[in-house]
Image (tube, rainbow, N blue to C red; front, top):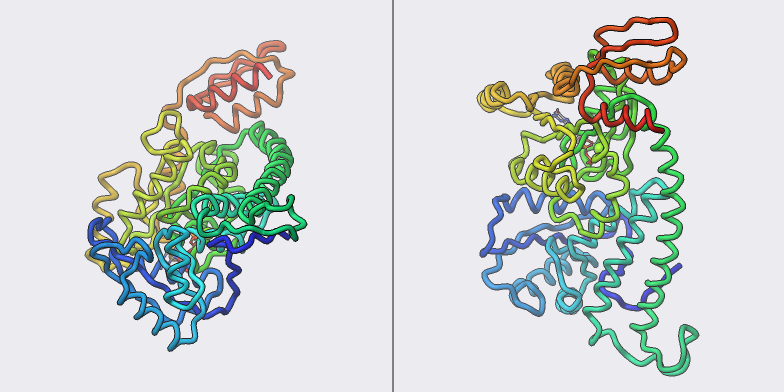
Length: 438
Ligand SMILES: Nc1nc2c(ncn2[C@@H]2O[C@H](COP(=O)(O)OP(=O)(O)OP(=O)(O)O)[C@@H](O)[C@H]2O)c(=O)[nH]1
Ligand SMILES: [Mg+2]
């Protein structure tokens, strides 16, 4: 087990630990989110790793104090709240520099973690697959390494000649940095190995002719609930942030298709740590290689528009942004409309009717879910071009592929040749050609 001296951010957070959550409202940049919903989300994130939240409050900053971010009076207040509730942990829903974190710890008399490290903790606890675990660990180390560099001056101290790590006079920070570097290199090698295995699996699947539909969206939007509703599966769907971390795929019925695959994916969140975006790029390859994306949105959430922007930003980072060339087509599933008032629901339904890339639904009641199935099937067939193909009669697998992926409008056998007239999307046409040359 790796122990890194006192790198800020390297705390162990225990389940059931009492914690105070502090939201920070910057007066300068109101980003369109309500402070209440933002604080609620931070509390949700903290609960997601089983912390016992004893108090939560948003502080407004006129001018951030460089040393601690929060003002002097504010940190005193926080220290009092923590003390009165016997809380040993303070969660600040913002990004803290290592120096700010350290000073806050001193002033508040508690451990302090920021939003990035909270999210890393959640992912660390939840990742279920070997690959997910390795990726999270890599992200964690990357985060710590960055903080070691920046906190050079206050972490540096001579180790004297005792250390068994490195030679005499090696500073603690050099030793720490070397430990991190070595560990990161080892994880990357392990990841390469896991990835090779996964690529093998994916190749096998890509050769399988079925279209893949990926559910994406903000955490807690209802992706898993919709996934269960559409596949009849029972994956974990809970009122908990980041309930799903590892993608799950199942067969799904789609009108006009023999078979299709639905993929449930990890939820996005605002200010997703860049280390995690990088780390999860591989797992989220499902997203960029899908035939179609369904963006599940919680339309009952006060910040639904800001959430949509966050999701589209992460999709952009994954090369699957709505405007990107070659990105899969996208349908928005406006979910949780059962929670809305009649007027709000009617307004959404009217908006939705005007747009062909929107389906208004409720994954809980099932209302609208069949329309989503239709819309996805239709979108997959859209842009399809007619191709008149001549194949060898012995080429049963490619003929079957065409039937599965495309709409076969005519087929006749002529001695040992089969003529197939088939409508294929441009993506599938490219895939078919790749099959041909394989
Ligand atoms: N009222 C209502 N609740 C819903 C609906 N869809 C999902 N929920 C609830 O929203 C919560 C989150 O649902 P999930 O399906 O776990 O959400 P998710 O998008 O998979 O979340 P993560 O995996 O955490 O990213 C659960 O409590 C669901 O019961 C809906 O249409 N109406
Ligand atoms: Mg889920």
